[in-house]
Image (tube, rainbow, N blue to C red):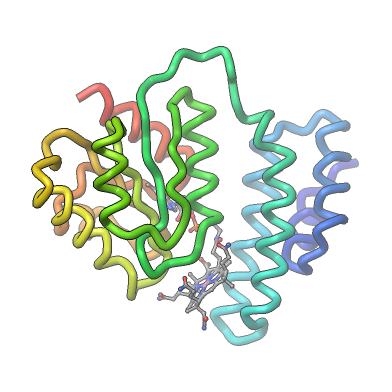
Length: 210
Ligand code: B1M
């Protein structure tokens, strides 16, 4: 019987092969892909984050856990997509300059694709100029992710770069990541903020309709 706590534990332990096997087993037992993601993989990474915070684990453990989590999400990705949906619009998404955290950004990208958006993944450590270029290339929404309090200001810098390029009124800007708040979004003039991947997709739908 599929046990989400086992999947969470395998992520925490960085057991890539075991994560892959448990995810496949859970799917074979009929567990929904979104449930495996939210109640297994994400729970494991969140719990590990707490241990990291309290100094019980260090960067190498977090790196192997991230690798295990990515292996699990790679199996789920095709199941979270609906390829027969017409594109709702193009979102260029990236983690801001100086920030290498990409797991949350990838989940947001997956949910956006699953909802019907075309997603251009700019990667992590993305300089403002790359976001600006993405708008020139046709993105209607820019999605910025930041996980570090030290990199949050790059969101404001990127919005300033869009203004300087004369593109700010041609694009909607949405932001997110663990340290981000609605208050911060308002402060820097972003068009929207969301706490998680599912609400990011809902937000993008609202923004594209404006
Ligand atoms: Co880092 N790290 N890390 N880390 N790391 C944090 C963020 C930290 C909170 C850990 C802690 O102390 N508790 C802390 C930041 C503290 C702070 O700034 N206040 C921290 C630190 C300090 C660091 C380093 C500086 C450590 C060091 O080197 N001494 C270093 C910085 C490197 C850099 O970026 N320059 C570093 C490195 C790393 C690893 C490379 C080892 C690894 C990243 C691997 C990778 O991403 N490929 C890592 C990880 C994994 C974490 C934790 C443990 C987990 C992050 C994660 O993936 N969460 C994290 C602790 C934590 O967050 N609890 C931590 C799971 C993910 C699903 O959630 O990313 O929040 P999250 O995304 C969510 C929402 O936030 C939201 O939706 C997502 C899905 O629901 N969301 C959006 C995210 N982006 C969005 C965008 C949107 C909308 C919603 O719109 C566009």
